[in-house]
Image (cartoon, rainbow, N blue to C red):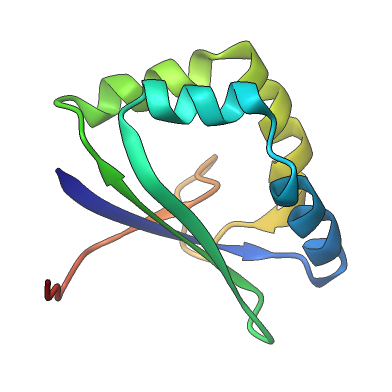
Length: 109
């Protein structure tokens, strides 16, 4: 198992919409997350900085392949059409990078 985390910004005027979407995530999206070996997935909001922090545990053997599988899924693409406009990538993100992966620097069980 590998712990992974990511961060992105959120537009203040889109916070309510983003919360509404995530209060009723489509079953197909939840199923796709599970099929891609992601477990214990959470997204947190930090205000007033307007940051989203995502955390999950990856239980697969090839994260790049699972991430590509998720990105190719038609329902996931449809979901991202709704969620991506709510977000603002970090200032130094690579072109097209919606979420920036974070490096784990400490963990305690």
